[in-house]
Length: 465
Ligand code: SF4
Image (cartoon, rainbow, N blue to C red; front, side, top):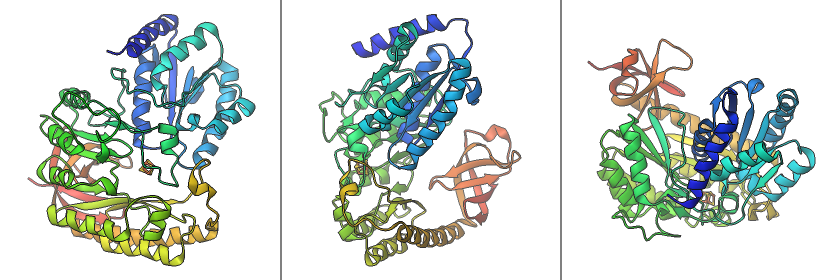
């Protein structure tokens, strides 16, 4: 156990003592990606060990934590809007307001908070998340405002308590940071350079989750297929690459499905494709972020692959893993994108037939090269292109869905449907939502379902006897 974690565990005990018998409640508002969701589970774990219980009602919260994201511009508006609301609650019941995550690594945001929202109590960054118990203790004991943001890459701290949001599926972060510097992206500036976790720590975490009954694991990182390729890599373990890690996780008894997010096409080496092919638990849907189908735009984005290389990679994977399908991320309206460039994006979408596409309109992020580029695309053109892409994607999803009708799919049952308590819901290996009639005892199990009908965002199934 590192000295840092020992100190933090002591602070957890100290805050717990201060809070004894007070019946305090907390709420976390999480913005952004699955990595942030996983960070929030760690923050929850620390907070619950300090004597707070979770609430969904902001009005009764004694501690509100914002775990922020700065990938999209509207997240800032959401944060500032919500802070106004929490200010009134703070005035009524003395609620402590803590703001953490990626946005706090941006100096201009912290400055804005100090000038216009100075009622906050704690600001912490991505490299100081594990110090939250100390920050909270200092706030409670000395009653002073805390700013705890570091510019240097933090070490990976193991052994933090964690409160999971789900009891069937769990995310396991395998690395932090990114070295790629795509020109639209703020992540390398706020999350630092790539640091991989010790493979033994990752495997132990998955083993523990399997013992607790978790069935599906998602391995997380900004660039998972460069795991153990930079930073400290000399761990005393036979796992030397992401491909090795997949094979070892695949051996863990009790785990039925393995997913990972996000890989980078340029790092998709053959050994990783072979591991996906050989490991029966690794889902055969690969998230392969395209971002643009135009070689010229890809160059401007610093993605380090061309349209042809991307398509060749898809073809290679299809040859090596016949049942493979793909999901992707696409940005429309990057500076300099012409109608022809956009047509290239549509062309790739038509050729690959993605199962799922996460579409984004380019949004300028202060501090990135993309923000400084002169030929920004006008908003109305960006929106028109987005609508055209959406139309194509939806028509392809509908075509893909039809292929499922009449097939038998293995579905991991996740719970009851959010819109109809009478139905159970789960996902196929390819991440399609399937609703069906069945007993609640099936929750947490993999069942075989015959797909009887398709709808845009879900399929309907029947249990195969
Ligand atoms: S790979 Fe590119 S898009 Fe992904 S986190 Fe790194 S810089 Fe951002």
